[in-house]
Length: 235
Image (cartoon, rainbow, N blue to C red; front, top):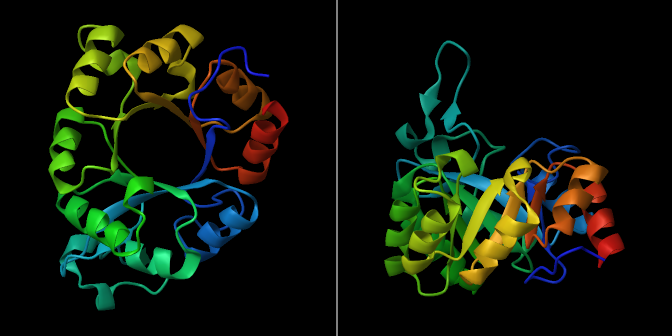
């Protein structure tokens, strides 16, 4: 059993960019495989295309080394076939999972919410951004979408308690930090403000176990099989 209790029991297992350790990241193949391996959440990144669709990709550029252009410069039908939109992800994989999205282009936030709303998945959509004040403005898009402060401990101006208190007061739902930033005390602090604690870059058994011991509510890993085995073992 974990040393401290999480709010989410069991914690969410987010497959980072799909089953990234097992398939090309942010592809339908990776997302499908992650769910087959037991992931209870998927993680991806989103950019807006020129025609306003939410395209799932990490870097946000397409083309060869000599002619790389941003996704925002292309319509959806001009993009490479391996790229998918959020609507296409839901159409292929359904909605029975939590979905964490790093919002790389703030113009895409409204489309992300609209796509999730169209399939009844709004409450399971987690919008992540390093600027919590910007993320707080997305509450106007939806009363039920989860808003996540994705940051690092060293960036918390005025200290962790002040930072978390301000984010909580602004309506954010969770704090997402690198696994090395979390301690049981910091998770307890986040829980005290009725927010959830999420940890990313969690790749090895010992790291996963250490993070689960803090009472964390969700973990992000490239290795879905490893992550889910440790979550089930500690349940």
